[in-house]
Image (cartoon, rainbow, N blue to C red; front, top):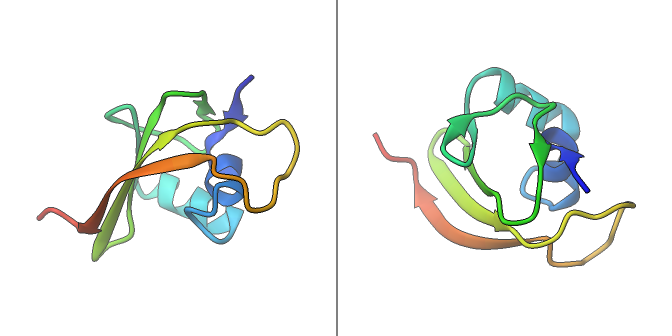
Length: 86
């Protein structure tokens, strides 16, 4: 099972809104397994997502890809959270 990156970012609560997730992808601030990712890129279990919010960066590993919207379920394991590398 795979899910679009922008939808996954919203469902995992790494990003609050899907439109923001799409905008981050458009501006090359999201990497999937080390490569710049588009909003429609498929996300699978085991993938590593890096999101650069400008001043901070979050790196997370995908633990589960939901088939339906979930609430409060742990979908990612945060590997790194801190300032964005310059």
